[in-house]
Image 1 (cartoon, rainbow, N blue to C red):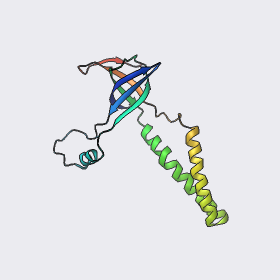
Image 2: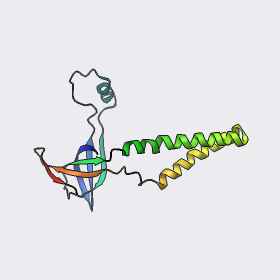
Image 3: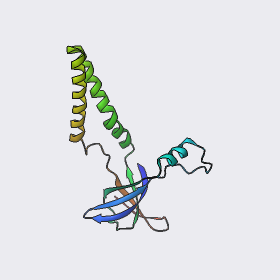
Image 4: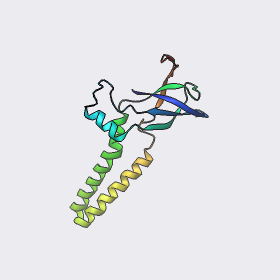
Length: 147
């Protein structure tokens, strides 16, 4: 499970809106010379706000630890980049085999549209949704776990 510290901004029904701040760098060196540090400085730190199920009954201002499953990033990357590329190339090859260049271009576009439709149908089935794992008190101690 990939974990991130977050702060609860507001609670609406059974969901909590949390804000996670990207660290950008590993923090293991203070020299600022590694490429990770330079990239983080170039793109800056971004605050991310998103909803999670409020299984710990957290309140506004509470600190929590949220997480996503290990394979979720790979599945998301395939879904967003690999699947459209694969369907586009398959469509282009099939179109080229059947009727030539114009059909290849048309079938490549058809493959991209098919991947868009598949992504809409499979939107919530890839396990990407973050979950609230633990509640943290002001001193940094874990005070609650989700079951």
